[in-house]
Amino acid sequence: MKLEHLTEPRLIFANGDHICPRRGISQYGVFDKTLNNRRSEINIGGVGTAKCIELLSEWLEKCSSRIDAPEAAKQPNLRPAFNGFNLESGYAAKFNFDSGLARSILKSDIDDLLKIINQKERIEKAIELYYENIKFLAQNRHVDVIVCVIPENLYKSIAVEERSSDESLDDEQRPEELNFRRALKARTLHFGKPLQLIRDVSLEGDKNGQQDDATRAWNFCTALYYKSGPTIPWKLTQDASKPSSCAVGIAFYRSRDYQSLNTSLAQIFDELGNGLILRGTPVDINKDDRVPRLSSQQAYDLLTAALNEYRIALSNFPARVVIHKSANFSDEEIDGLTQAAKAMRINIVDFVTVMDSKLRLFRDGKYPPFRGTFVQLDENRHLLYSRGSVWYYQTYPGLYVPQPLELRIVRSEESPSFIAKEILGLTKMNWNNTQFDGKYPVTLSCARRVGQIMKYLTEHDKPQIRYGYYM
Image 1 (tube, rainbow, N blue to C red):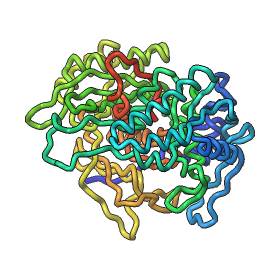
Image 2 (cartoon, rainbow, N blue to C red):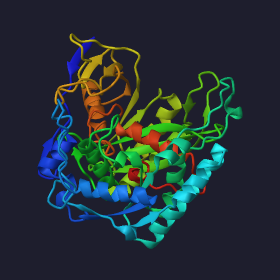
Image 3 (cartoon, rainbow, N blue to C red):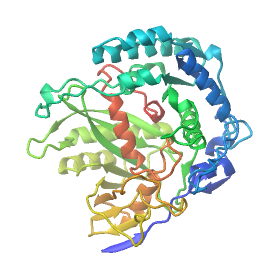
């Protein structure tokens, strides 16, 4: 067994690099700050009750200026001050929001909705209520992102899915899934306006059990900035000596009625970290091990479609493709994916399974192993702590004992250390969270999130290809 510690991957910003998104933005500016195709003004639409709209307006105004770190913060690198979202800050942009970009939902309509006893009907009515107002803004106002503010009494009424108490029910007997957030995002995809859903209590300032204002501002503003697109807050550093590559994540999602499985694919398709979303076809489940797998033809078609989109974006093909999957690759999948790459004259294809591990490491003292701890168990199996104690934060920022990832390198032209460093870097490409110690590489975390929303689309609906619509 061999153990080593991988250095924290660095991120590139407009005028420098840093390991931390927050410090990088505040000191060096967002990556695309110097690019010509970026926008410096972002129009925000708002949907909610009159109180919700007022809270949103006050929060956006607060975010336009510096927000100090909490006085009780013991780790200044973990909870730094927010630099403000304005033209003079690291974002070099500002939000535009006024009454003309807002649609108010009547409090009486919310009250009537809450009186509905059947939960499925209540959720459907809530979706319809927000949908009609989103539709108006998307079709009649120039907005880049629409923020839907959910009153707390409504949130508590629709956020929890109805589940049967009978654990013996099989898939055919389970009620059809109906999730407000997923269904609303899926239904509004065709408008081409990304949504940001937020509870009204999250806009009311520091409260017990909530993040501090500065941390919430970092995450909220960065997510809106990325969703407004085409914008890139940061990108990963690249090794100039290595060939150009793209990373592909393959994940499966079950239909709402639990009767079929589809594949979703998220691909980081250029050097900026732009994500491409594709929808796969239904797959069969092996009755012996209950593991979904692609046929050779399905794997071929899926990767061919992804690589063609890559070519459209960059006018050429990558020299290398690395494919991440959260379950073991079958021989058919490897054959189909390999043949698709060869058809595009791509000779280097790496296959890596990324899954949770039941193994744990312990170090002296009360804190868990450091993020970046990498252990070679044998030639093909390795452990990687993508979550753990973080030297830069001077603490372990999690609440529970961290679970390492198991990396099964099925086939690779690169060293195990290089593969692990690549995955560690991809855990930092989540623009929905500026705390950089994410657990999963964005290839898989993105594909899973996409699948949650894809299941609400019909076969005739056309998915959006940008990840910002699914965040």
